Image (tube, rainbow, N blue to C red):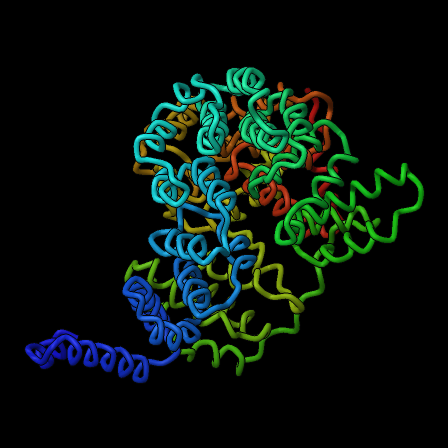
Length: 581
């Protein structure tokens, strides 16, 4: 590229631009269908969109294979809108993650406002969403689109309690700022002051504005597992809910056991959310509750069957609701030598293996996953076996997980170091299926895995935790440099897991949450329960997204490991148990 720029220099901007475009096209022609080429096209498209070079953008965008960049999707809609297409519904469905908006998505919204395809209400919903998700820079960027001054948006972000104390005011902007401030205060200072402020301002607000205000308060109250959230949700009927709010509304009703409200709330979700296995399962359960123990409604059965083939938390629960236990599917036919030779000779996989050998995991994973995109079921299984042969168990698991019709659960749920785990878990009377379910989620069996917060090894132990456990069990001469040693890591991790389990009434559901978020948090979450709930409801209503996902995955993993170890059908529902206040 540098040589080309030198050769084009001095020949004018149009000639230079022609040379640059020619160089890009030559590169893509020379290296077609490559991971690094697709990343380069991604960067080029961002530049083309930023420069509003729509003809070239429209030519190149369909060639971007991964199509995983939200900004480019916004530029694509902007290009279409400028050509006269009505993209309003597509834009509303797309714009749900403000932290990823960059320059492109606010530009799209500005153009949609100018073209009268977006209303002020759309922009205010986006400002509330940006504040809800902590994307304050985007809120500042969007504010001028609805006539909000820099001073006003700064006060909303930096001093929402002052803005809230002023009351609702008289203008549309003052009302909207007040409603947004309610949410900011409820998140930072608790829901009660915000609820009191809304009550005081009630006479100045329309019914729709009051409902929106209650929705702003209900979400943080629900995420804090406050009992008042139920009333706030009822007060918010008719409000426009963010995707997160729509889901937390259902979780609040699940905790309360109000399946009628669960049903109505799920049915009111956007189609994209309703299609999630989580809400398919709970809608089916709500329909079953509506039947009051009579024969399962046909609609509920159809919903359950639609996800029961999925090998995940809600697929397993759906299978049990249909009267089946969880088993290991029949293994695929053994891979042939020819299939393995094809995998070993795949240029992309070979390139990935070289990156892994050099310690360049990011580059290796990018190359590996690029090759998996268009593989058949048999090719995926062969790639997974190639990963196993090269001791890349995380790639083996992730690759094998992609198959839909042919399965190898020895690949999906490996049990390395069983000679180490078996005696340790037996001595502690610790369920090794659960321990392996946790390791699979924690480290994917990467021996030297290290998290962003400093947790290390197979069982992802924090240095202070590892040292505390070592002292507690009398492990002489332990130093944190030993934490990645397999024997030491499993010994310390299994002991810590056992300690957490005993401190949480031997509930694997609670202990899984405690292992991830700290043992004190599940105690607090449990204390807020209004009644005894199914373990699945407790897991689904964990306030932290990471821990919520973690617990569901660990318990799902453990159920499959138990089926592999015990060679008999298992029950995820029984493993989850009941969580009492």
